[in-house]
Each structure stands twice: as C-alpha cells, then as structure tokens.
Image 1 (tube, rainbow, N blue to C red):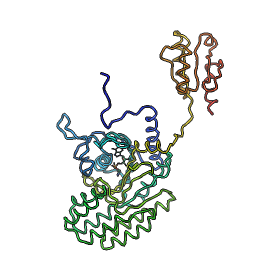
Image 2 (image 1 turned 120 degrees about the vertical axis):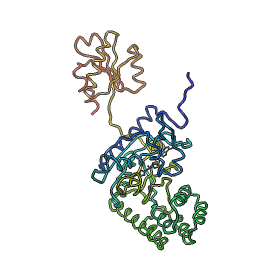
Image 3 (image 1 turned 180 degrees about the horizontal axis):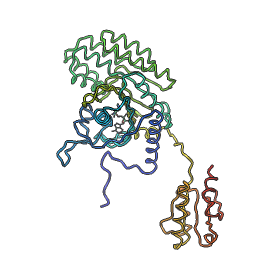
Length: 432
Ligand code: HAM
C-alpha cells in the first residue's frame, strides 16, 4: 500500500520544520520560566461537555467529538483553557493563588485547511488565575511581547479590545446571554448589519445601536485618545464605563512597564470564545492576516465548572502560525553552534570500536552519528559532506594500535591522526 497520505488538515513536520516548531516551543518554555509560569500537562481527550461549555459556536461546531467505547461523549481538545480551568476548579481548588500555568501541545479543530489554518495545530498557552487586577492583564501582554521578541519576529501588533464594554451595554439593555453571545460572534466576523439587526430584534434601545455604531468606528494606535472617546460613547452605561476604566488602567501599566509593544485599540473588537469578560487580545504581523495568538480575561469560567469564584486572564500563541510568520520574515534561528561528528569504521571488524568511540564522545556532550550503512569510507564521507557534518572520525586498524583515529575536519578539508582521549577536547576547542 503506497497510497497512504496524511489525513486532510493534518501535517507531517520534516526535520527543518520540526526544528523550528521545537525552537518556538523552547522559547515559550523559557518565557514561562522567566515569568514564573509552571508547566502542566493535560489530556488531549476531555469530556465534550467541558470543552463545549463556553467555546462559542465557531469552535463548538468544529470539535472532533465522539463517543468512546464506554459510551462517554468526549472530544479532542480544541484549546487548553477549559482543561486548566477544570484543574483549578477541582484538583487545585485549595491551593494558594495566583496560579501561573503554562501548557504546550497539539489542539484539534475541524477548520477549513488553508495557509496557517490546520486541523491539528500547536499552542503555547499561559493562564494567570486568581487575580482580577490589571497588573495580571498587563503581564499577559508583556509576556506575549517577550515571546514574539525572543523568536525574532518584527513589526508585530497587539490588537486590543474589551468585552466588558460591550457586555455592559447589553446587560443594561436586558439582553439575554444567548443573544449577547450571538451578537458578539457576528461582530467578531465583522457582520455588523446582522449584529445590529439582532440587537434591534432583542428590543434594545436606539441609543444602544448608535453606541455600538460609534464603537465600531473607534480604532487606532493612539490608544489613550481612543479610550477617552470610548468613555464618552458609553457614558450612559455604568458597567461599560467601569470596563473602559479597567482597559485604561491595563494600558497604562503596560506603558509604565517600558514594554514597547505596538498596540492597536479596536473598540468594536469581539472574539469567538464565549467565556471572555474583560480585555481581549490578538497578535498580528503585517505579512499575515490571521492572528498569531489570542486571549483575554475570563472571570467566570472556573465558577461555571463548579470551582470557587476565580478571576483569570490568559493567552494562547499559535506555534504553527508563529513559524509561518518567521518564514515570511526570513528569521534565522539563533543556534548554539554545536559541531557534529560522523564516526566511520574502516572495516567491518572495527564496528564495535566505532560504537565505543561514538559513545565516549556523546558522553562528552558531542553530537555523534555512526555510519550504519556499511559504506566504504569515500562514500560515507560524501554523505557526511552532503549533510554538512563538521568532522569525520575514521576508525582504522593501524591508528587504533596507537589508541588513535583519523580526525578529518570536513569544512577545512584537513586531517590528522589524534589520540582517542584527545578528540573531545580538540573538537570542543575548535568550536570555541
Ligand atoms: P484562539 O484565538 O481560539 O484562543 O486560539 C489562539 C491561537 O491559536 C490563534 O490566534 C492561532 O494562532 C492559533 N490557532 C487557532 N486555530 C488554529 C488553526 N485551526 N490552525 C492553526 N492555528 C490555530 C484560544 O484558543 C484561547 N484558549 C486563548 C486563551 C487562553 N484565552 C484565555 N486564555
């Protein structure tokens, strides 16, 4: 059977791409460490009910959901946030707050495959749980900036909004939560006419529509000017005024921290997931029109899962899309220069010696491959050259009698006989 292919929307990562994915993951893990986020590992399969609770229609309809053999309705996780919230609502419920939790792994959504949109994708996910203070929101912005900077991306912009401003209006208009969520979904897809129609049908006031119309026009990089305009626009809606103030405080803290992230405030911005209650965020680069990451504050999810009232804020960065952005921006990976070595036995009887030398070098921290194809020295050297290996060690009978081997520098095309005990030192010395 030679016709098997990967399933639509699923990808293989060949070594070059796998390396970039892991590089980004390592940078995310480093960021987590720098900011005090502890890693947790949660299951790929969760109960459907948990994942569907506040996912929003967009994600809910695209879940890989099925009954397991025990007749339980389960799904492959489309995001990490419900799993982390579940843990905080249950196992971790009596632990001291705040929780700073980090996850990384694969997620599954039956999205329409296209550039940057896959059915299996990867996120690094950061959640702070237990704080309702603006400094927690500011921290999420700062760590996103740190991550983007550390992978080498340029010209990225953080799109910022505040769901509390919109929810404040809808609450005062006595709109039910279902309609409220539908309106926000439509706004998220920029289907404003449909959104306003729904608002009208729900019996909201004229004032409500004009306020929403004003808000969707308010956007730009002069975030504090826009905040002032938002405040004026929503002055009749008490909860919304408080939300604007919260937004202002967060933005002020980000500026005070010295974090130089480019922010673009968009007062009519909404996101598909239904659990958001406060600030919402998405990160973009000019080369792509899809978000590299998204998140926000969600103060009621843990309670909804039966836990204590626990305000929370978090963000997930799409590792696949970060890779795509790095490729578009021609970012080169900063690498630790580690030279690799190929050990080639000159004849069959010396295979054991070759393996022994390889082990010795690995124990000294050197990257070693052994020739395993039984090729002649010249063919093995050709292969080492093609794969840009830095050194070849040729294990020959004559040199071995002197406890030595031939060390060949494949870049400089020089070779010398060297005592086995000196190889590691020599290679490391060459690299430094
Ligand atoms: P989200 O906006 O649904 O948020 O996803 C976050 C990021 O995951 C997106 O910005 C994108 O980079 C990546 N992503 C999503 N779907 C796909 C896909 N089909 N293919 C490739 N990449 C994709 C969440 O998942 C929330 N849980 C974030 C959050 C954490 N909010 C609070 N805490």
